[in-house]
Amino acid sequence: MKIFYLLLVAFFIFEGCHTPEQKNKKNSAGYQLLDTAFIFLDSGKAKLAFSYFNKAKEQFLLSKDSLQAGSCLINMGMIATEQGDNFGARELALNAIPYLDFKNEEHHPYIRSNFNNLGITSFNLKEYDKAIAFYQETLSFTADSDAIRVVKNNIANVYRKQKKYAEALALYQEILKQETRPLNLSRVISNSAFTKWEQNPTYFALPELHHALSIRKQEKNISGQNASYIQLTQYHIQKQVDSALYYAKLSYQTAHEMNSADDRLLAIQHLIKLSPPEEAKTYFNLYQNLNDSLQTARSTAKNQFALIRYETEKHKADNLILQREKTKRNSWIALLIFLMITGSVITLIWQKKRKERLELEAKNAIRENQLKTSKKVHDVVANGLYRLMSEIENGVQTEQDKILDQMEMLYEQSRDISYDDVTDSAQGFEIVIATLLNSFASTQTKVIIIGNTPEFWNRVKVSDKYELKQVLQELMVNMKKHSQASQVALRFEQTEEKYLKIHYTDNGIGIPEEKKFGNGLHNTGNRIHQIGGDITFAKGAEGGLKILILFPAT
Image (cartoon, rainbow, N blue to C red; front, side):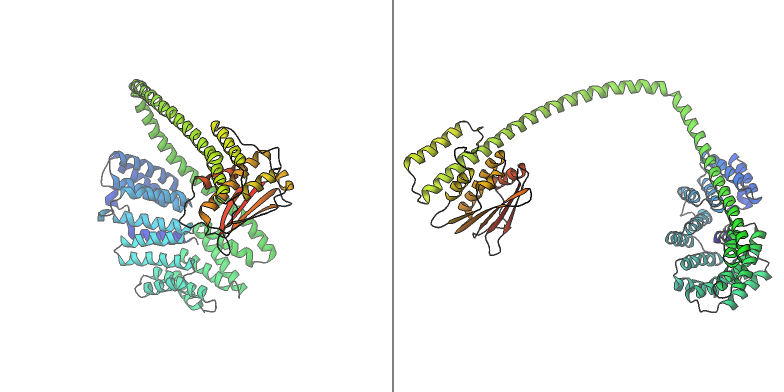
């Protein structure tokens, strides 16, 4: 049997959410609608009851009776739960909470009912942690000892579903020590025995299960008998098929008497599994028809509940539209005035922002040109001068005419700083690079060059040669200034892949961790990235500095 019905009936026995005194308290439209809703509810016409509870709620909202408005939402949520609309029921129950005063004891019965219903919907949705949380909230507003035991039994049932058997059994034992009412006692005995068997399949639970069934028969409690038949079916299903089939048939019979579609479906599932093939086929067809009918009925109920709420909200929305139309003309005038003022302000702001943006773009353009100029001065003049100084300092025998030629070339280049250096077509580029690198050699620093061949440079784009030359010059300048290296090696590597490599290694002091790159090394990285390559700096195995330059070949 669907657990909801047992829990709901047991809980409502002590809730008293709609006593005769409350129903006859006033003769207002809200209370008249509320009385009608309870009449339909008591006669089993849940959909009509739902509709009248919804109408009563709207009247109570107009009269600012928050308690009764919340009560209507609570009852609507209970009806939705009973009809299988658990998500709709949860939404209604949560919407009821703001209308209830948790500090007012008069509201506590309503609060208890609402949290208990939230616990039931969460249980039905298999959200067991939320179910326990809502049941714990129910306990905090419950003072009656009988009611407390019912809620604790609900919590124990959740623990059993979670397979937390020890926690469930502890609660069942606590309830058994205090419970005296026959029906509640039979329920706890049955649940406790079944939980012990689920925890330990060798546990002999039959005496307790039959004891609970005998109490229920004595009390003529059909729903309780059905619950016992279901448990006895599950208990025997693995070892005693005949007994399981016997109790499954009894379960189906009592479910039919109660007109409980959910319990009939569960009984039929057991009968399909336990019956001979021909009977099982009949039960299977019966299951399909009943399940389709149940799903259709529940879908219809959900749609009707949603439609009732939609029509109420639509009616409220239509009233709001009518009210808005009365002030629409004045609103349009005010809006036009506002738009004119706003448009003027926006225009002024836009003009100011545009002026600031143009000024900023001009400043950025100037700054970009300055950076380009600075970069070219660094490449052409600064590094060129440093290279010439290095040759003279290292004692290289340089003729005066040659020095003057180099200085004149630097002079000409500095006159037109936008001049883009190109590779010297009069000699091979490998000679240009060798001359550049060897100019940094001295008696204190030995420069070793490997793989600097025409074949290597033939695979380099013409536009990339200039950038690589400046990069190598920058590395050698930094080596001369900072590394204190006695040996420098540069290896130019060709591979079968589409990339070329230049390996730089020295035995100097390396780059300290706290050292920040200057403009030169930053420009070096930028140059490599511009030609689609990459450069990495690393510490050598025995100190010093290792640099790998990777760039695409033609």
